Image (spheres, rainbow, N blue to C red):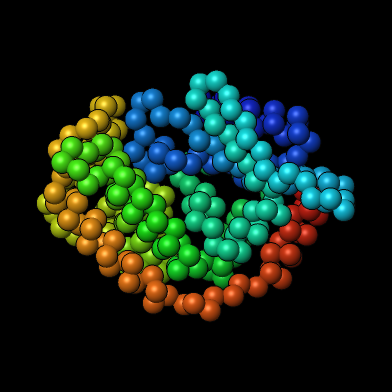
Length: 256
């Protein structure tokens, strides 16, 4: 499948007349809790040719390509990417740290990783993860019988909030890294790891009795981070100059 993904990326480049700077796996496969039938969520960053930018009209700055075999491709144009990077966009920051890189050419992605220290905003990232956790917890995990696979979509963002609080950096994508560094209670850790083993083995995790120790942990953490997020710096004002420079450098590097 990886060979097919790389082949499709090259086909997209040729068909669209673009250069793909960086392409990774996103979603459950990168998070480390994919099941046997999980989709392939390929995300990529690309740059158009110089003439594309010399227009008085705005143009579409993203693309989506759905292919057979559960292949889901989505790409962002570089100027859009850098605007989102300036806002400390959490999915983008995650992609830059994905454990599954399908393509990385030119120096842009590595330079963005270096620039993360200037643009990472713990407040906006914590808001993002907290919103995700609260929504999934409210919708799926508060009845006597719950969709147990949704625990992953609550626990991962909660543990990402804990990482940001304890480490002061963007959280890693890998769920097991978050478990190993952010879960201290041995009993809680055992319950989470048991769910993870079942999910990775391909077991269909449908409705089961809720797991009280996980629910209690989640509720406590949501309450904590609703207060904690307000303590983060409210005056975060990232500059644009470094990103303008990176954009121009990429144009020169790619198109000579």
